[in-house]
Length: 377
Image (cartoon, rainbow, N blue to C red):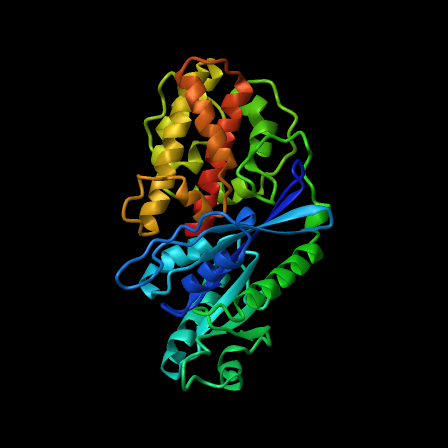
C-alpha cells in the first residue's frame, strides 16, 4: 500500500501495469519514462526473455506534483505477461495502489486479455482484495494497427466495472500518459478516502521498510523487555502481523535442538522462522548477553537468505546477485535495507553499537519475514 514519510512529507504510490504478454506494458512504461522530465525520473530496470519482454519487473520512480503539501513519488511496475510467471505477478501486485490493465486491441488476442483479467482478479482475491475495490484504468493498446476491435466491443468483454478506458498506442505514446494520469487521480482519491493523509507516523520513528501500516519494529520494541530482558524503547504496539504469522506457523514442525546456552528461556520469535529457529535462539541469546555485533551479523545473514529465497521463488535467474531487488517485489522500500547494511558494516568493523541497534535490526528481519509470508503464503 502507499507509504507516507512524515519527515520528508513524501507519499510513495505504487502503480502496476498488468495484462497479457506482448500487449504493450513495457513499451508503455518506456513511453512514460521518455515523456518525463529528466530531473523527475529514475532509471528503468527491464529484464527480458525470449518468450516475454518482461520476466521480472520494470521499475520507474517518477515524481508527480505535490498534493496537500506532500510530494508524490510514483513506483511503476509491470508484471510478466506469461501465465507460468504467476508467482512473480503476485509479488509485483502486492501493495499496489492502482492497476493499469493493458489490453491488446487485436481480435485474436481477446482470449489472452480475458485470461489475464481473470488472473488479476484471482490474484487480488488471494491478497484479500477485489477488482471492484482497486483503482483501475483500462488501456486499450495497439489502436494504431489495422483491423483492431472497436472500443465498444472491448468494453463489452473487458469493462464490466465501467472503469475509465483509454485507447492508446504505446509505440507512438498516444494516450499512455492520459491513462497514467487517470489512474493516479483514482489512486489518490482512494488513498484520501481511506484516511492516508490523516495517519501520519511520529517524526521520531526510525527509518524502516517504508510501509504505511505500523511496523513490526513497534511490537518488537514494546515486548523487548519481557522477551529479551532489555530496557523498553518508546514504540507503539502493532501485534496483528506477528499474531497472524505465528498462528499460521503453529502447526508446522519445529526444530528441537534449541537448548544451547544461547537459546531463549522464555517467549521467542523463533516460531516465525521455523526453518531457522535454532539460529534465532542464538541471536536472541547474543542480544541478552550483550554480544551485539555477533547478533547483528547473524541477523543480516538471515535477511539476505530470505531475500534470495524470494528471488528464487519469483523465478530470477541469479537471485543471489542482487537480493535487494526482492524488496520491491514484496512492496518494501529499500531505505531500511540500506540502513541494515550500514549497521552490519559498523558491527563488522567494531564500531559503537547499543541494544537499540540490535533490536531494530531484529525488527527489520521480522518485518521482512512477515512480508514474505503475506506475499507467498
